[in-house]
Length: 312
Image (cartoon, rainbow, N blue to C red; front, top):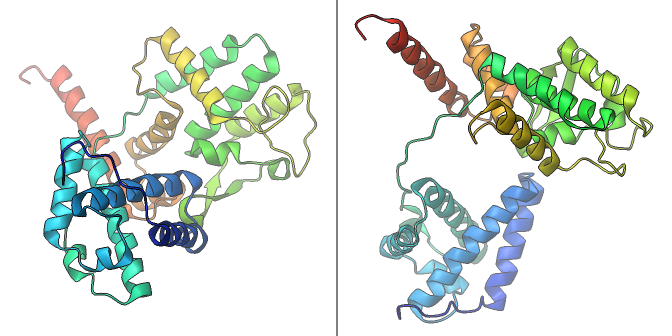
């Protein structure tokens, strides 16, 4: 491979196979648009590398001849570009999934390439807000926007994230048909997994106040949370609201809307909630994903111990 060479164009046959694989992932595994875009970027990087590495655009036969050395060369190149271990692990996982799918379709043995494992990395701990910090965010948000209905809307959304542990996409995906909220919300999350999330009175009241002030009618097929012109509220607007709140309160950049979902989990755990229940409420496919919150709780306990113990 020539250093600094321009990446070769994707061969039409490979472009077609990639498009079909992405369609398959979207249809059979119900991947989100965000995940599909990430997979596409990962595979384009991988196939572009193979084209440069072998001196010609990658074809199905190219994938059939891959070895562990090829996969390690790709990993080394990506790390050399500054890709983190976590991002590289995801990129290699996408490449292996595509290779496996291609081997089934084209009948080649992919065992050598599939034997390559991704790099180990330490999963970073979530950065939740303390209960009082989360409450302060809601208070500031209610006083920030000059338009009362928009301020009430943002408070309602953030209350759902903290009080129910919803992802921002799940909260903003609610429609008028979901109102009035019942004792539990049926949420369809990642991978099409449905879960029941109990609704706290504070969340129901916050949404009720928003809808009382909202100039748009509640219609079954219309979004529950609307932008200023009546369309579905965009996540970037809620991110902007959180940015303003953390600036006023002096909170770190990690105080994002998703941090409120982390706060939901860690506050439940600190109050004695069990991991299995929290896993179900968050909609995690694997308990190992939920277990990261035990590290947050342990870190908090250690910080308290060090601050309070006279010999720490």
